[in-house]
Image 1 (spheres, rainbow, N blue to C red):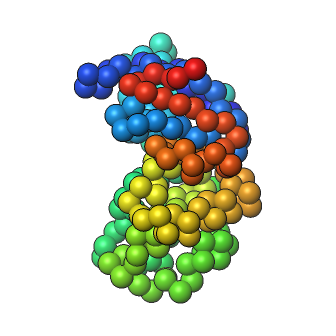
Image 2 (spheres, one colour):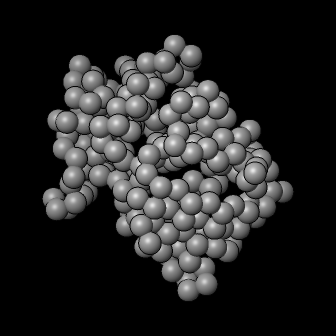
Length: 213
């Protein structure tokens, strides 16, 4: 996997001006709140159009403002896990996990339901509703839902910020499993550099919209 990002975007008082390349494995984007990390993920995911620039995934242009190229989010095949799990409260864990899978063409289904459930130890939770899950369990369900979209790239936007330290210790090994067993490239945003020091192939530091060299 190769990701090329070179974008400029005005957001509030900050001008996001970022250019970097990423290969496979885990790329960590670190920096304080307000650095522009989430805005950058939104641009990569297709949730936000940059003022100027280009994003390419495996040499495919997802956005290129010079040629007016724009791939909508559902065509980018990028999974996204946010700070809060954002599960559907009226659906069971099983239904939440399978939600994205239902919309995939069979030919695009590279990951199956049972292997993902086993990988993330979700079998005991499948019949529950989100309200009966801990914060850590909800994030594992959100991760499984993202994986079952068979993403080319997985974006993780501070996925552990809403859980306590002990729950973080429980979840991090699951992220390691995804990284080593499924080999899905990941962009991991965090302000806690200790979460990624021994996991990331590369670390990109940001502050006030720009990269720190």
